[in-house]
Image (cartoon, rainbow, N blue to C red):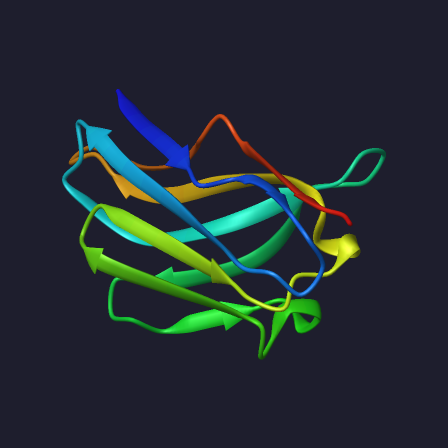
Length: 118
């Protein structure tokens, strides 16, 4: 089994910054891609940013130039969010494409709330 544990959400004023962290543990042979998705009330879950094992990144157009994604080892990923806007308010979920040694599966964290409001 694989677990993803997120931290770093909270309440911030417009224009502020937050840093989300996600750490993976469990039966992991390798992690192919790690990323962040978000889901606002009444909306679908959308990709925010992702990073491959080689360091290639991909961002949603709405966050380009404001958010950065990084990995400091094979099992942790971070999302630095700057110049936050009210429309960034959502539950943010960590995602990992994990090779368990037998198969590749997608795993999700429990989600962390980000609220941007004055």
